[in-house]
Structure formats: structure tokens, C-alpha cells
Length: 350
Image (cartoon, rainbow, N blue to C red; front, side, top):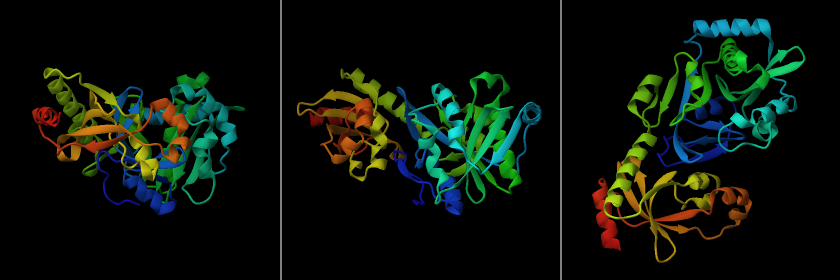
């Protein structure tokens, strides 16, 4: 396990460990994405780069709000809820299919692909929350348990029961179960800077959020301080404007394959940032681009070339067909603090 905080352009994947090691991974900012864990502050969603902010609740110190207590009481009267270690993914597959339209990012083919690994030994324990309306499964959620932590893997509800806030209900049931088991920290995943799609998680009381440089802090402190993705947006906007003023056809573009280096060791030379300023083609078939080097508070000029074919290209053929071929990056100069310095670099390099 990598103990240090990740570089801001770093993205890692690993198998989820069990017990106290799972607790430690969550505390270091690792999150679960299907059968794997990832750690990194950025994500590409559609045509946007978003900032990831992991959040958690200290369940023994924080209770439910009055509205949450009322929601739990009302739904416990209306439905039958069970929390069980007897996981049945097949039972929940129809709800997974019914919720496909609201799931963000790349979707797993089935709930079995997403969560099946956690039914085997060697990883965190999987717990299932079922909400029944008679014989109908109205909602279900799955939580991974470490030694003193719980991580909400996914929550699903039947569309016919949307008016009952069952997504929030199962989240509260997970918190109640973890608290009753003597657990300490509940991780509902992350919220996103640039989208409010996951902000329902902010209804939990007393949340802490991960500042990628300072560790866990009260949520308000982290959000007020700003996220690295906002610094990247600002730096690249300045770079784009500076080059356009000099007559370049500069354009900010996404590089959705920025995380491939985490999956394939030989892909480490690939561009490692989710967004850059494209300055156009070069005579040798490459492209000229600028990336934001956030740890240094600077920007850097790159020559981007299509990566040579590797055996792993065939293994990830579906991904590459969707997002395009991978690019490798060659720095053309030291990082610069001001866009005018980059413009001068390009003039001199050309």
C-alpha cells in the first residue's frame, strides 16, 4: 500500500484488502470501483473533468437529523428492512438493470461483475440491505465492512418507489447497522466538484472530507479551500487565452485515457492528466500541448505522440475504441509559472 498522498496527476488501482488494511486504505483516500479500489482526485465524465472529494461520517460521534429519523421511522413502518451477511446478487440483478440509466460513468455489465469478487474470501466483508414491500424487493444496497469501517458500494431502488427516498433510506440503514456493530467510520464514497449528482450524500450529518494535501478535515473547510480540479481549470483557461491571443488555435480537450497507467505498468509514459490545451499538429505527426503541473503551480509544454502498439492494446480494445488511441508525452521544457513563458518557449522551439 502506497502510504503517501498521491500526486495530483496520479491514479492507482488495486484489489481491496480485508480487515484493518481495508480501513487503512479508505483513510488514505482509496475508493471502490467495482471489484477494484482507486485513488485519485480527478475523473472524466462525458465531456468534463470533475474533481473527486471522498467523504466519511464518524458514526459514533454523529447522529441522524430530525428529518432522517422521521424518514427511517416512516419507511420502517411501510416496508420490511433486513440487513444480512447472506448476500444474494442474483436477487438484486433486476434492480441493477432498472437503475442503469442513473448510474454515472462506465457501467458494469451486471451486479455480479461489480460486486461478485466481494462474495469470495480475501477481501472486505459484503453486507446486503434489503427493503421489501411484501414479496417485492423495493430497494437494496451493499456495504463493504472492514474492521471498524463501512463503505457503501452501491444502492438501488425500484423506480415505482421513487417517492419514498429509498436510496437515502438504505444509506441510513447502513449507518445504523455500522453504529450498532461498534463501527467508527462510514464512507458513502465521494462527491464531485463540477457536478451535484452525488450531493445527496451531503445530507449525512458531521461529514469529513479528504483534502488531498492536508488529510481529513471538516467538509466545509475542504470545500471552502477549493479543489485541485478548480486550479487546473483556471490554469488551463489562462494558457488557452494566452495562446489564442498570439494567433494559435488553442483548445482545451479531455484525455479520458489518463488513468491507463494505473491499470497497465507499461502504460506509465502515457499522458497522466485528464485535461490539456491542444496547440495543434506537428509535422512529424505528433501534437503540441500544454498541461497543468499543479504540485509545482506551473504549466508544461509537451510533444504528444501516439503510443506504439503494445499487447495490452488488444486486451483493452473496447476501451480504446470508445476513447481513442493512447498518447505518450515528451516534455519540451521546464514547467513555467506564466503562460507568456510558454508562448516564448513555443516560438523558440518552432
